[in-house]
View 1 (tube, rainbow, N blue to C red):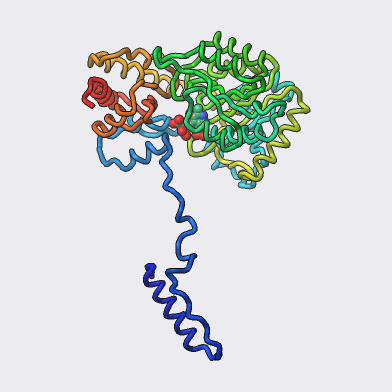
View 2 (cartoon, rainbow, N blue to C red):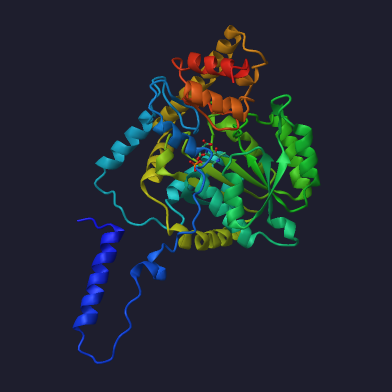
Length: 450
Ligand code: KET
């Protein structure tokens, strides 16, 4: 039976009266105050304000509420097939089948640092099979809750242990713009967040000069967040030459690199090519952090599989760093989940499965590139005013269209196209079927139907 507030109050008050009336004591007890006036009647959370939806994940919430049959979700960076369906890679299904059929598999807790084999293979994936840092045992890798969790653990570690000659060393510089969650992850961990120029709206390309100026002006010892490849949201990456320039500048100033690698393999279709910028920094013998996610490149979004690696100067330092990472992780979530990491380890350890994965990964990257060409052509065919060449020049999951907030709102209202308000489109959510609809919407938004 469900009781509403009024009915509960009536019952309690009757009970209260009954107790008062039936008491035999001669002392007259004060009548209980009406229940409604007692302080605990109101919620202790009554003051809590309604929070806004997340700027990225909230787009999916809005999309799910829209009954329109033509709606398209280009908000969150999640891969869809040509049929608009989420994709579980064949190689992942095979790995899961193997795990399922293995009678020796158990569900015991993993160590605080996660599955050891997964950690080893993840480090090799990002730093390279022959990485000297791995061979010299000066890398510590811990399994974390996907890319976000890896960033968070890294940030907590830095806030606690990054050596403090000056207060600036607890400052992290992030690109402008960047993934919307970056400032929140770093701030909540206790780091001070500042930005460096990255994107030039005029050219819709890299503001390399601005980037160099801002990093040159950053205080020595500051941390710098770098997108390893397929920069989110802009789809604009430095060239390898530019990376080399950035590396020299950062090393000369003692700036600590923190790589966020959420899209390895999604930019070029090659896992090795996309890891080049990180490997450039490892090759010089200096220290760095790298957060890896398997959400996109293995399609393991909801399994929350990722890794944080810290490359140290010596093996001895790496051992001590790992001991402290355990102290960060243990009170946060104790130890990471076993299933996703086991899938990844099964694939990475087996030459044939690894090969199958690279083929599926390349197919995803190629489909995204073909969506770029199709959208570009569709806008040219409509004579949509403006230069849209950035759609084919940008790289990775997203196109940073240049559409403004009003235009995005118009496209959502009139065309049921869902995207983040900064004008970012997830190209991975498009298909040949939905390209014309998107092109119509962009055309209408740009030609002033707003
Ligand atoms: N770094 C970057 C740059 C990034 O784009 C994401 C996810 C993550 C880390 C974290 O991914 P994880 O699922 O924790 O491994 N970006 C997409 C999803 C999201 O916002 O959570 C996105 O931008 O749509």
